[in-house]
Length: 139
Image (cartoon, rainbow, N blue to C red; front, side, top):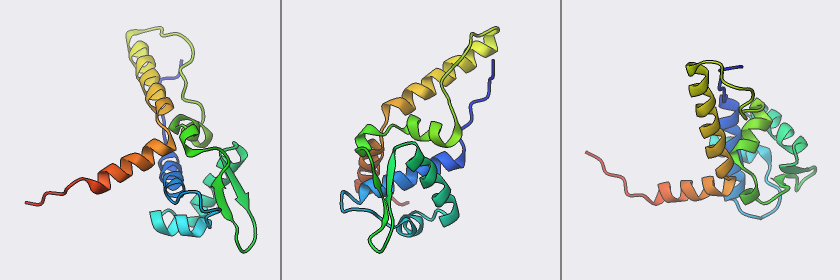
């Protein structure tokens, strides 16, 4: 049984970019360069991520002057788990634990999968909105 739980920076970047896209509402396709600049994600990285997300049926792309990316499904129907597994591969636990250490890693993996499976891109937009409205205290 594999005990590695890996979520890369690419997954984080994909979730951040999708949150930016969802936060712009339903105004039509958004040029990828706008998302890249707004979230400081290198364009070549974003192109790779959005290509994978398009192949996974999460995003749609449109070419041309009014081209860009938009959600193929509502952002509230796209879980963070789906994004992470599209970018980094399957996280779901497999096999059975053969030791106490394996059991702990298995449980940690299950908790992570559960958390990511319960959160959507819309939840991330809402969380960013709450955080931007929270008062900041400086000392």
